[in-house]
Length: 286
Ligand SMILES: Nc1nc2c(c(=O)[nH]1)N[C@@H](CN(C=O)c1ccc(C(=O)N[C@@H](CCC(=O)O)C(=O)O)cc1)CN2
Image 1 (tube, rainbow, N blue to C red):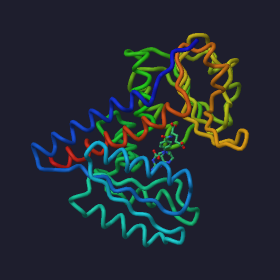
Image 2: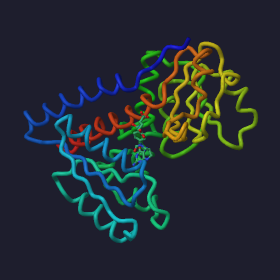
Image 3: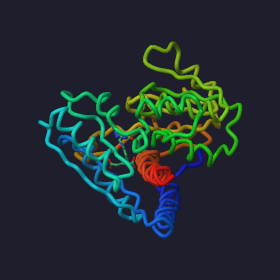
């Protein structure tokens, strides 16, 4: 049976580190790292994530500001708010919850955020810095996956890693981080031929395809490490249940280590967001 990599427990450790950094910034510099969270529209999942982000921020002693805007918000309204947050010295991190309603241009919104406050690490300046292997604000989900991987593989050098999915939020930055850690990296996607064989050759599989239980035990080499980034809501006996992109029951019988859904990558994403906010606050001091 695979070792379970517990994201809930690990995220609590990261949050403790964040809390002590918040305290240090307050004591030494009289600065309270502050995160501004912007939510546009009524997407129920986004509302849960935003609520959890603000709750965790408060628990660490960090400041948080919430901006909840209606679905009819225009690009101009949103740009104006971002401009205001960019110029507010009390705000160290800005996060615009994605996805945005379809009439809004996500790329334009991300590009409007001051890269120094871009705690999601999605701004082209931060994307470029990551690709060049320079210090940057790194996207939260891949950052959390790396912390989880290091629990099992303190040295990732030479490992064969397959990332299933090529999104800007997860797949691409994940591949960049694995490469930085000297893994041999393959990015697989919907047009990739024979993904199963690629995965079967991998020491590490990162499942970020956005397709429920796509990856089953036949795809996994015995002893491999499997990180499940997928969050898919289904209904079982009239109750909401979350499942990942990995068929957990079968894969956990063959893998060496695996992350659960829920309680895996999700809580790590939030912890890394707050870690990025303290990093952004410290850099803004300098
Ligand atoms: N601006 C951003 N938007 C989105 C991001 C992001 O990193 N930045 N990622 C995802 C959603 N996301 C963070 O915002 C996120 C998803 C899931 C969780 C989480 O803790 N999930 C729990 C289950 C929660 C539930 O009951 O629904 C778990 O997996 O245990 C946190 C953050 C897209 N948008």
